[in-house]
Length: 170
Image (tube, rainbow, N blue to C red; front, side, top):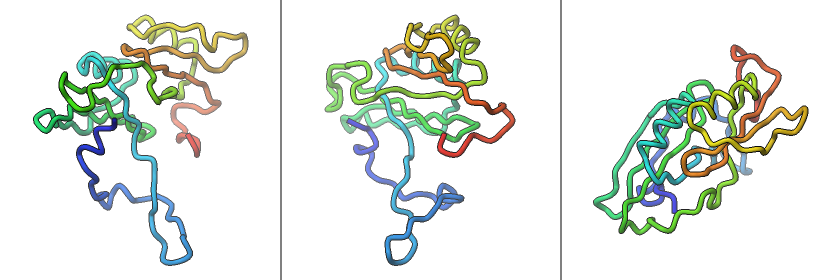
């Protein structure tokens, strides 16, 4: 269960709406919906923070503790370049959300665009990411590693440089 539901909905700050496309529904223009973040469970929050901040350069932008209300701790991370957000959720024993952990439960994978798949794959594995053989086919422009909890992470290569903006749709 997503901790965001336990925290309740929050109004969007005006700056979060800047540059977002408005959708017409036959009446006045209104922002109906947008993907805000991806939330994953972490069995060891500090270990997961070290992994995502240290290996992928994500920065912490928010943190909350609902343990006293029977939920858990969340940490929201953001990629500086793309703006994509990842929420790490940890639930203490006895929390209504502390269900048996199954890696990838309802989550397929996270994807990071990289300049060189093989170099980044070797670097991440060397720093503690779990190696996989998936994507090792000749000529593939992607590889997968796993995080400390067994969640799959895709590394894929696009033909853009690190100084160009992130392509639309990614």
